Image (cartoon, rainbow over all chains, first blue to last red; front, top):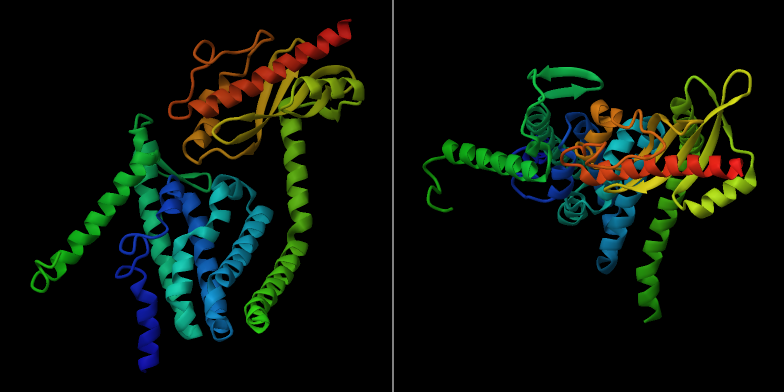
Length: 212
Length: 189
C-alpha cells in the first residue's frame, strides 16, 4: 500500500511541486530555445522523457556497482547512449522534425535535468521509484515547454500549426515577433514562474506567509 | 595503487563496451534508412530546382575541379537536361554561412537566371532563421534573380530577425550565379 502511494508521489511531484523548469529551474537552456513551435516541443518532450526514464532505470539498476569517484563519467556514458539512440531514431524516421530540432537533441546529453536526476535521485533509489521519478519529471518538463510554446507561437506568429494543419489562427500576421525570439522566451518563462508562485501562495495563505 | 586503478577503470570500461554494443545494434538497424533519406533529400533538392527536368551530375571533371578551386563553398553541380538531352540549366549545391551552416540548392537556366531555390540542410534556429526559410514571400524574392546577382537591401529585403540567414541565402544565390557565369565564360573561350 505504502509502496504504491510512494510511486504515485514520485510520479506526481515532478509535475508541479518539483517541476524541473518552474521550481528547480534546471534545463532551461533547451526549454527556452525549442519552445518557439508547439510541434517541436512534442518531440523534444518525448525525447527527454525517453532519455530520462531509461537513464534513471539503468543507473538505478547499476547503482550498486558504480564506484563513487567515477559515477559522473558513467552517468554521462549511459545518458549519451540513450540520447544517441533517440537522435538516430529521429533522423531515420522523423527527418523534418530532426532538422528543426537540430542541435537540441544531441544537447540533451548535457541537459542538467537528466544528470541531476541521475545524481540526485536514481543513484540512491530503487528502480521502480526511479522510473516514476523520470516519468514525472519528464512530463513536468514537457508540460511546461508545451504551454510556453503555445503562447509563444500564438502570440509571435498569430497561429498555431500542428503537423501542417492550422489549429488556431488569429487571422493576422502582424504579431509581436519578439515572442518567438529570445527575449520572448524569458518573458513567457518569467510570467509562468510568477503564475505558479501566485497560485501556490494563494493556496496556503496561513502557513509560511512571511517565509519568502 | 594498481588495484585502485583497476577498480575504477574496469566498471567504466564494461559500461562503455555495453553502451557501444547497444549503439552499434541501433545504428545497424537505422543505417540504411538514414542513408536512403539523405540520398532522397539530395536528389529531391536537385530535381526540385530543375523541375520538370532531369538532373545529371556534371561530367566535365576539369571544369568541376576549377569550379571547386574558385568557389570553396561548392558541394555539387548538376546539369539539367530536357527530354531531348539539351542543356537547359544547372543546379548548384552550395554551402554558405547563415546563423549556422546553410546548404542550398540553386537552379539556374542557361541565361544565368535563377529558376528555383531549395534548402538541402537547414540548421537555422527554428522560428527565427528557420522562419525566413519557411517564408514564401522572402524566398520568392530570389525567384527571378539575374546574372548580375542580388544585393541585400537593394533587391532583397532581409527577413526581420534573421539578417544572417537572409545574407547566407543571398550569398548562396550569388555564388550560384557567379558559377554559372564562370561556366559560360570558360565555355565561350
